[in-house]
Image (spheres, rainbow, N blue to C red):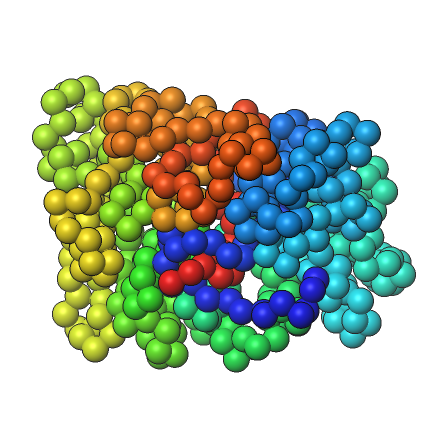
Length: 483
């Protein structure tokens, strides 16, 4: 990592031009998910590792570099995609790795902090404790070189055949390990056992890597309640669990926190309290969605496209929640879906916590954010609906992350190419739609400049990535955006 570059983190929106982002390229752990463990490890299916790398995720890295760190890739597209290169450009630890201080690879950060013997010893001991390793294995791991040890922590094996502990395939979803809110870092506290090692590694990186050295007193961690150990395992609502997919920074003063399958209400309350106490924001909104695998986090049901444009699942629109859906079969299905676990939205002002504001629909909240926080005209706010609001395509495409889009600048978002009806809805809303292959070729040839793109949906290949149940919003932890 080039330490000469200003190590600044600062995020005040979901759509300001992205300048630095934390990612993790698919490691060999994804190729070790077996059918019987897929759901335990939070996957819907097993994935083909080579396809997910070469034909899907690599395009994401190339596009991020063209937008964030062009000198690392401009003029080299044919070279890095040459089969003879063996993907060295994309492999952390390889001599040809792109190594950017703007598109920051998590595995590189972990390798670098493991160069410190004290940190290495502490982290090895901590990982071995949570994974119940023997003392002999712990001592053996202390003998690994930092790069090898980093791979072991991710994949669970040092030689691709002999397992030490399970892989952690969800680390590609870097959004969930922590969120930058203004110039603070809110660390996650995952609900699922499969993600405990991720949270531990992330904590060490944020506390010990030099790029975060100026923010050690701005790291916010959530703590368990004093009586948490007395609670039964099924008391999920009383446990303090939070993941980054349930946190959105929609303006400098306003943060959204979801209460979902993965984030509890006590965690949301504690996070808001801490953000208020540290003076990070002055307004916070809790968005409680049904606790269903279909939804998982709030960023699976809505994300922001630009200041006045959002994409969301129509289940939470004014019309659907008021029961005005014309299709009676569809409406009946939706009523059953939400009967026991309905949407609830409560907004708190720091100086008036006793009098929260409530919203009847998600659509009402999103319009209010665009108008009240971002200065847009109510008449100009547009809501693009998953599957173009057509049943069953709305539900099918939400499942494959039609609402989980990453804005790399205001109005320019990345989404999966398989969500055809949602793509049509973007076109109807006046957006250009471009395939990533075409866009990369135009950027490389100089026919187009990344900064000049406006109102564009970039379609990314997604046959395998979508099996992991996360889109590009999940696969990014923004560290720096323009105001």
